[in-house]
Image 1: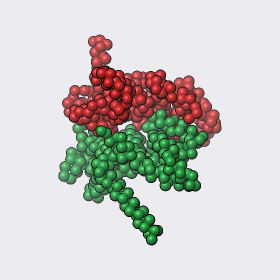
Image 2 (image 1 turned 120 degrees about the horizontal axis):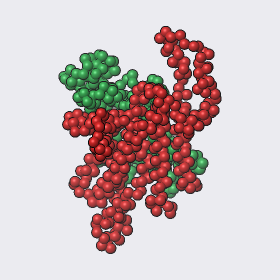
Image 3 (image 1 turned 90 degrees about the vertical axis):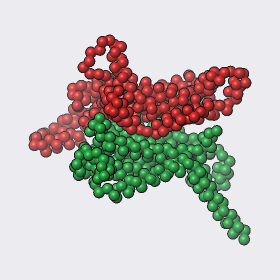
Image 4 (image 1 turned 45 degrees about the vertical axis):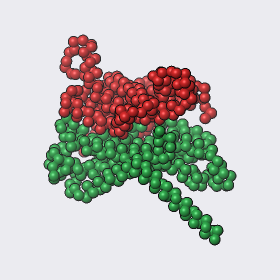
Length: 297
Length: 329
């Protein structure tokens, strides 16, 4: 009877927790609109890919420099490719690189922050200095050096290179979180009760700073995408395929702005802005949950 | 941490520089394939009979590529320290050093002006909004927050389209008018400033938002401090309270972030320079990338790494001198 009761209680607590979280997400306009926007972007790109019959990559598959029309929704570029197909395809590849790099970079940051921050000592000292070194070095420049010598960059390579330099800032801020959390009473208690450090980190520390972690994840993804597009605009990226950055690279290469081919350079810019803005909204919303002081007066 | 701040910061600085040099040195060497061999094969494909293995060995010896890696690295370090960055391929026989010297001032001027403009404008706006919010202030605040989520290329291309193409108020590119003899040095300065407006504006519009957001947060927390209450009780004017008690304390802690954002702005300025064909190091870098001029790419990259890390280092060292609260910790 007691057992059943406590089981029921636990279920109730869980249900309340889930309801709370849902309420927070729903009530939090930032997160909700951010997520919606991102989902809409992905849906738009996937649907577009299915509907548009043109090849986004193959040069010369359609006539050149056509303005937007009912056949070519966003016109065509100077290399003879349909721009709407490019936009949809490019959005997906760009997001792919961004999220892949973001996930890898976030995992690196997580490990650096928790292993260093929790255990302290020499390892922590080395890791913090390393973090600061990465923080003070201009990332894009280092990426340029590396990408310039790699002859043919594929999407996973690109993501890896970017991830290697996208972890420093979240690692630093997360470490600060871990340090303050480490001194809390319930962590002491769980340490006394004989849990090993991995269990404490996974079961007691991470759930406590989940909103923070979510917001850092969004930051890493957006930082990775900034590097990605920055590299691609300069012509350092998977040039044999299409991403939003590569689209801009070709547009700049063919002086699209001063040749009045606005349908070439503006759509990828708008799409990138929407992607970054959705990530920003998501991150801001989680920040507000994690740090009530940000809610303002 | 046990180490004193200055020593710690110096270690970080030298490691950053060293890391930059190491990557610069290793990247071309770790990529599979021997550049000489590739070039020879290309030549042979075109029908040119070029020397075989013996030829390669001879050239490897001339460039010191037959020595062990650490010896090569020491040679590389000593040549960099002596300012020898190699010879540009596309501008042969100009040395990379000379190319950089020619284009560096443009980047320096554009970058530093817009960078500090961002900082002061951003902090001022954020402090104003945090101090007392009004409809107008909030609208401007939101505008800059949205702008800060834009990208350098978006803003730069839009400005170029709007103010150089649709309404040709500003020039579409370059940093000065070519083929015109100026009446006086004053006219020349005006011309240069005129060309710099759009590139600088692109950087400023994007950069302000970040500072604003942070400054507002700081100002909101400062407003609750006792010393402001005291200042008010003493009957100091609102203007004085804002400037000397609020703004000053919002400005100072943000200086620590100057070093970190420097890298971001510097790399952003590369993209802006490319779009406006502004003859700074960024544009030369872009040209070097499209022409595969490796010595020039590496030289300029090294220059950026050196510039950004050194500027950050100086800012961080000066900070304790400016803000006494840090000194006593």
